Image (cartoon, rainbow, N blue to C red):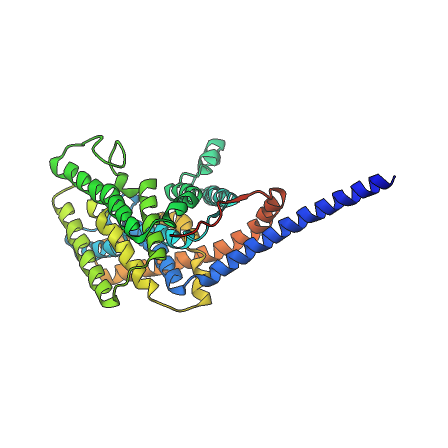
Length: 395
């Protein structure tokens, strides 16, 4: 009987050791997360908030989504205002991805549950909105509609999840190459995946012919930057700013931002005046939109301060992106734009943005309270839910 006791003791010891190891790993992960949270500058978190608001403004303007540009007469005071706002905010999505590159470069640990969380969140929000419309009588209840509402067709979330999963492998290279090598990489990446596609897209507009297969991004052109290629480009730029920074004075940055914004406004107005189908000044892969994202990030990175409220509000930025789309059909944008009063339009837009952000913040809090216990249980059941490529020594 003695050997059995010894075996049992050894087995119990192994189990205890494994449990302790898991617990230690979990604690280390939480500690690392807290540490990363503390290191985040409130200036950049403030930028995250403004980027989320910028997305709302872009969709408020978007004529294809029933936004202001559909109703504002070209050359009217309202149309000029909308073009200026568009130029100011057009880099919002690029900024989101750039910020991820800036922060995620230093971590090669990825949680496999995170992409699942994001996709499930899209599905649940869509389903909740559909059921709300059923309750108030705007749409009939049907199985096909329920299934359709739960399809997570959200280009940003899908591309974000893809980038999140592969970025540790990018980090291995980005953390090891020298500054000189990084400059070469940036030159090639911006040239091939931003400047050249911009030239090709404009060539198509000006010649009136579709040059299939000429773009460096895809058979059908750049797709206006709605691609994983543009996400990787912005990630690489953000990672560069994390490693090496870019020392440039605030006045120079402000001048650069102002000139770039003026260029985008004039370019956008010119495209519309000439009757072009698309306003290519505002495509996300445009070199000038990429440049605006970088300059804006550098401006906000100079704001060195800590503010708990800003950091908390910034956590709702993704929720703002997900829920604002449900508000757009109900904002009475057409009536406001047809008044042709920039003051009224700006006041209405500001109110809409603030209300949407406040609503999203509350929704985010409620959603986390409901779902966090569920995901914590999954983490307990699935202990190998993350992977870590380990730290690589920099050159």
